[in-house]
View 1 (cartoon, rainbow, N blue to C red):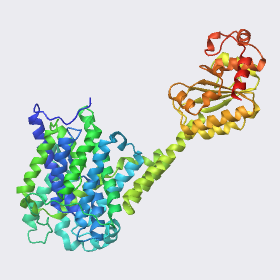
View 2 (view 1 turned 180 degrees about the vertical axis):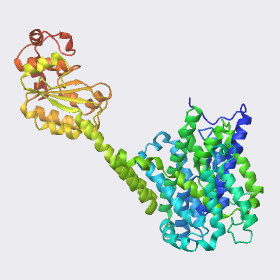
View 3 (view 1 turned 120 degrees about the vertical axis):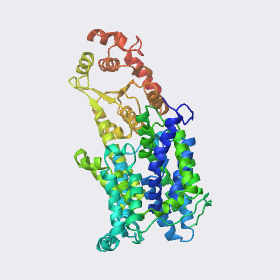
View 4 (view 1 turned 135 degrees about the vertical axis):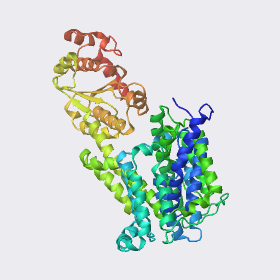
Length: 587
């Protein structure tokens, strides 16, 4: 059952409770991602409010909770770093412009109804990319978790700075204690307690209270002060030097948001036994990111944790997502000062745990056992994502994975192209066909095609062309071909031309629907006489053997003791004479 975000009030209690529960998880995550991205805690909160509101109102998955996510934050962090480095004055505005572009791309994808194609990516690429993003988040939060600040330069600079962080760990013992305690709570909190309160909120409140009680004079770095009230609009900002980079970054961010949201929507479907509207969801996500960028908020997507909690708490309609956005709005407008005592090390610990959770540990453990090629793609994409470039990592991964897939499909299709010239070949399934091939005595070549024939089969067809001159009759059996690609059709056309050039007679078997239309468009059917275009393999063999022996069709059928109904297009006249007449017409 496909549904959309129609709001009704038959489940108000469940929706409101689901929204409140999702808010409890969203608040610490939004603050953590805002700080981690470099755009500030307010950006994280506004991203959670605006993306969540518009995605819930206009999206296609009623129970989906949308907010800044780990993958989106990692990409946004790279964009903020790049843009502020190139233009310190306008870099942040340019980064938010990229968020707007991402939203526009998502809307375009939805309008063009591309939702069903977005997630058609090899799992090895998705796994490597997500694991790479998780590693980036872990590496970037390692320093702040232990009380240090990350140097400029991204992942490589953070890794180079790690020994220095460990060397001076004693000078930040208060923050180290809070950060490690946060991680411990997130990992070790009993599952029974998690049902009643999310560990992120326990760590956020508990460690903040500990900070105020025991480390109030210890120079603990906390969330910087940010203004409350409505956000200031960020006008789209471009520079000629960065416009191409911004468009590409916007496309990548939009694609990642689409994948993140739609994969979470699939999880929501499995929990609610419904089916989301992918295209409508992309439009809702795009509107959310467009408005979030205009208001200086982080980009967001469907969040798995928030969505699952919302459904488990009773949320069934978009009212739960709207409730969550409204509560967060109250926090941003009036309760923001309460967040300014939260230590940065605590937020780093929350983001650190998110990074660990994003890594696809399950696939990492068994990838090398499944296939060394799959493992190579996955690890290659992961390393390129971490140390080189997100875009290039995904592009190379998809290219290599598709090439390997094409090669496998080509090999499968080539195996379905069989040249038969003997009566004892396994491709001859009926006794009648075996009798007729025995009578032909090696003078008939049967080209047996089966399954979809794309460019992968063209090479195999062309290879069979070299042996055509050894025969007098060529039968091309397309009975079991549901799809005929252009390249394969051209290979068949060349084989027919070569057969006629070497004075062979050609028969076409089967070929209906789109296959027949493709043969007609390439004028292949017009080159084969009408009486040589039949519906069964036995019919073609009867006609071919009759012409080889100079018999009428009735004579060969009587000699073989066969039913005349096999031949649906031939009539009672001499098949040899008909073919000769047709050949003269072709000439």
